[in-house]
Amino acid sequence: MNYILFRNCPYCGNNNANTQPTEFGNGSWTIKACSSCNFVYIETTPVYESLSEDLAWEKTSVAEKARKVSKEPIRQFISEQLKTFRRSFLKRNKLPELIQKYFAKGNVLDIGCAGGGLLANLDQIHIPHGIEISKNLALQANEQVKLRGGYVVHNDALSGLKELPSNYLSGVILSAFLEHEINPREVLKEIYRTLTPSGSCIIKVPNFASINRLVRGKKWCGFRLPDHVNYFTPTNLVGMCQGVGFHIRQFKFSDRLPISDNMWIVVQKLK
Image 1 (cartoon, one colour):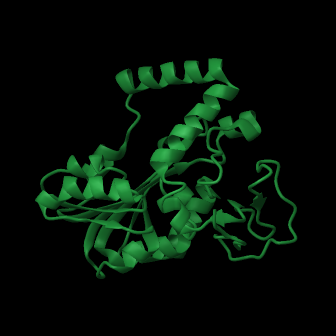
Image 2 (cartoon, rainbow, N blue to C red; image 1 turned 45 degrees about the horizontal axis):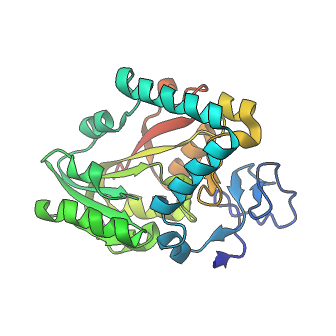
Image 3 (cartoon, rainbow, N blue to C red; image 1 turned 90 degrees about the vertical axis):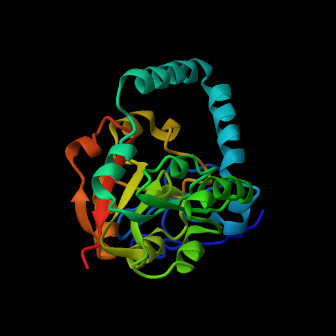
């Protein structure tokens, strides 16, 4: 497997080669807290080519689930039952409501679109587009969207975004993606460029500041090595978005509950 040998802090660019690792890594992957800004991230990461094939989501997700079941079978059984209950009786997925509320008519992009299920179900006022690093999933997703005038790019997010013209997208979806991205700030900059004025981006990421993470420690569900490479808190998520020019359109307390492992934010390009 190929690796990027070293990565500076993706939030502030600080070199943390001499910073002591946190307790959260393992023998293969080192997680550090930046000595300058305290952003938590994996210092060495797989190259994009490995994410396209060897570490593609449809492969690693199965392996990760099997690992968790093997280590904590009772807890995982209870967790799955609770997920089924929540999906049946509680409103957990905010994405459809946020898309309806904040995305205007036009081109909509889902980054890390997997097999294209979300794109296929977008309202008819939206033309669906996607970027997907897994070759097999990109092919599946393209079949879903091409009849509606859209297309899916098989590439990493940064390269795929650079193929799109400026002021092209009315909305961008980053659901469970930014924690995987080697260059999160650069991706947000490109999203800003490709959005139309007043266009919005919906972001969902794990919440490193959650109470569950503090209680569970190394066993927290948000640690998924090596494909979760960034660990956001509400503060540094807002800071990174504002740092590239975005206006925060929605980030209510209910979007970042301390008892929730995930958080949602909607950001907007004003001009």
